[in-house]
Length: 315
Image 1 (tube, one colour):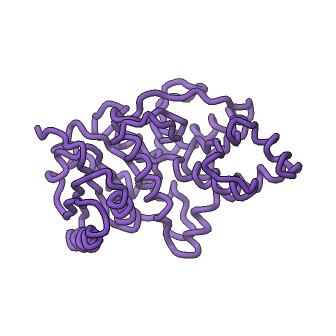
Image 2 (image 1 turned 120 degrees about the vertical axis):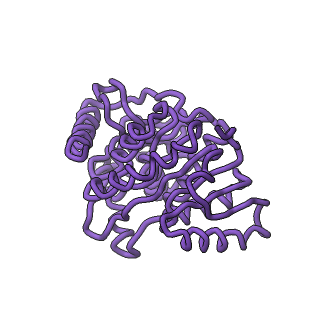
């Protein structure tokens, strides 16, 4: 069994999301070795070469196309492979197609790599995270999805714009499904500790309900809007992948809304969805209790039920 190389990452799938993620990971300086794996070996080789040519402007790194056995010692395996979301198609429409793809990919990864972290990015990410956990047999802390990390970034960005404040000072989460039933957790949203409504009023905004509905809708529809205009979304998610890998490799114990299998919190059981969790070198190191209103709790439960239905149909 290969000993893990803490400075090595494998990216499975070299489509838009995989190659943008590989580029973001190269720029991050977190890793000194990266293997790209794709069913189309030429595509993986082309991406590896293209990204490698920028190395004189970055940190020394070995980037190459390879096979699953080359991922044997990778500390993190990022799985972006799967059919993409087409205009007019929901993330859940992709389910059956992508579970089929995962049934061939995940056993190939785990045949060679038994101790790394599986970071699932392909959509629908919650369903595929659950599938990957079951197919890999890995401990649940080492299989999780990018979840609503990107949705949460979109949420912070839009709140930052609305309030004319640095989005990094906005503390707010999108939770639940990475998709149409996601929930904006307004109850716990704040700007540097100041409750969101108070901060809004400081900035001259008083129509809270209208603004809340509008911002949450804009977050939810961001992906659809981008897909409509340029057929795919990949830069935002690539930066989310980089952020998650940073938390793992640097053992940051950062709180991120990743997708993982739930065990009873808010009455949700045996389904993967996004809740704030502590992410470090061991993967998911604990969940973070979040304050939710009764309505938000009910919406979260409904989001979990939506995902459960899909899982029952898919498996």
